[in-house]
View 1 (cartoon, rainbow, N blue to C red):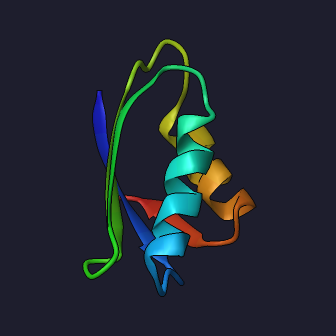
View 2 (tube, rainbow, N blue to C red):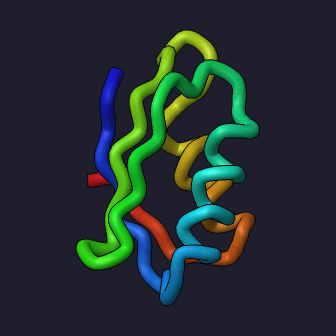
View 3 (cartoon, rainbow, N blue to C red):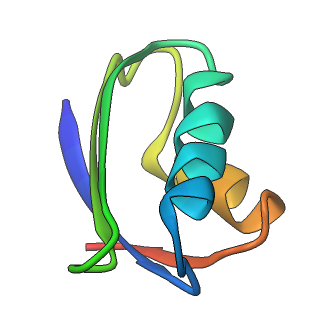
Amino acid sequence: MKKEFAIKGMTCKHCVARVEEGINSLPGIEKVKINLKKENGVVKFDESQVSPQAIADKVTEVGYATEVL
């Protein structure tokens, strides 16, 4: 499954790396693509192992406001 997330509060490449690392720490994550300028990210994942809400919760946990689009 592939889902897009709005991610607010990222200001630099370090922020992007922090979000990517956080998401990649979850089980079932296949691919993460974060776009700093567009303030969003697309995540490909195995829905039997992780939910879109769990991904959003992880982004919030590392310090950024997010919502599933």
